Amino acid sequence: MRRLGLGLAAVLAIGAGVASASALTGGSGNDTLNGPEAVQPDGRGASVPVTVADPDGGVAWAVRVYRSQTGLTCPEAGRTKDGNFGQVYDDGDFHPLDIEAAGSCADLAKAPMSLAVNHYPPSGKLPARAVIFGVITPKVTGLTLISATGSRAVAVTGDAFVVVTREDALLGSSLEAALADGSTKSYALRPSDFPLTKPEDPATG
Image (tube, rainbow, N blue to C red):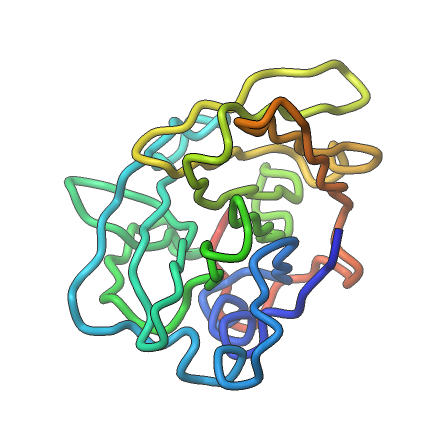
């Protein structure tokens, strides 16, 4: 497994309140596709194929997917309310977000799936949390999240998935993809390498 930096996408994600972000799959190995244009939307809009309930009773989570100017597929984790995609900040309100260069872009012609993790700092009574998200291709037939407490199937809707968990639950965990050829591919997950402290204008997990 190759761990890849998100570059500009990570900077923008942190600006939206994510304490740190990492992409575990999806790199192209092409400098042109790894530059700023790699995360810039191509102007054709985006879809929100999957939403899940917040495990702590907050605003639901979602994945928004757009295409970049270089043809990459760019999933972005956030919240959804009344059909809008956005974030929930420390004021407790939901803030819709326009489509901007904030996705974890991947070349799905060269990888069976895209996988990224956003790490959110503690907020109020909420512990530090991690949001695992991405998109799959037809090469992937199923996803399983494996942790110290057991394993569970990850639901996929419209080729996208999102899982919200406690940050400390990532220790020793992995996401296993079952492939159409009968093989499996495992992606190791781990807590953030950076202290999960609140940025100046954070979004809540």
